[in-house]
Length: 339
Ligand code: TRP
Image (cartoon, rainbow, N blue to C red; front, side, top):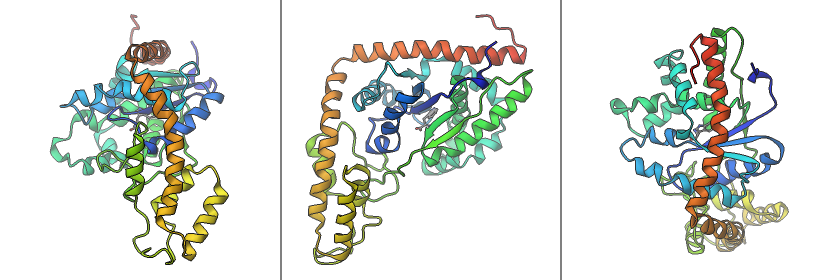
């Protein structure tokens, strides 16, 4: 039997396909994945089942975004020959492992998961909380362990998921005659989270403060024009704050010339540099970054058959891979493996 706990490093990332991906995804994760694929075997999961956990009554919202997300991935430079892109609902091992893990995790433990706790509050679920939503950390643990991923690039809001996954790994391994599941660690993005264009802490579709990777030239222009700066910076000659000023946060994240941004910050803080000029500089960076992504994306989305075929190929490979873990766990538990 292959011992998955000893094999070489493997990366897994994933996204819920509940809308097209945006600049926040790009900075926090997609950019890093394009680099990671040069050095690690990498699986990328379109987590449609997880997307359904809070969209149970509107499955079309999830289904209609699967190929959109696939197009986003390819448009930013994820290469399906080096990264295996796969669909969560096409991988029965993930659902089966979730069923097995649910028996070794208590309800109170999932309720204590800070990410889930926050989301339950934010979404105002109260007593109408879908059971599937409550257990999505268990399903995410199944994703990570089924692939045997030991490196999981995530935002800091996902750290409790990694912690809970490792608890499940420990518990399940202790029930098996020999360890099968592999512990994992989070790979935090070197760049922090990108705020929304309105200055809120997070870019989120629900808040309407995102800029999609597929944004048109006009949408980029509008977003930058409306961007939150320093409300106290009234006249150009006034000294301005660069901290908490979204334009500068974005310049830090996207401007290719860091020295220039440092000089602009000093000038702005001192007074004499207008918001308009900073925004023009930022808009140029974003137009330059997004134009080729938008063009590639438009061509990709026009050929849905090809996108589907690539997703099918990736899912087929992922299926073979994740079945091995499921079988090893079943065997360890003493359950007959029939096929
Ligand atoms: N929870 C992740 C998100 O909301 C998506 C996800 C599902 C994931 N399964 C995963 C991420 C496994 C990393 C590994 O973005």
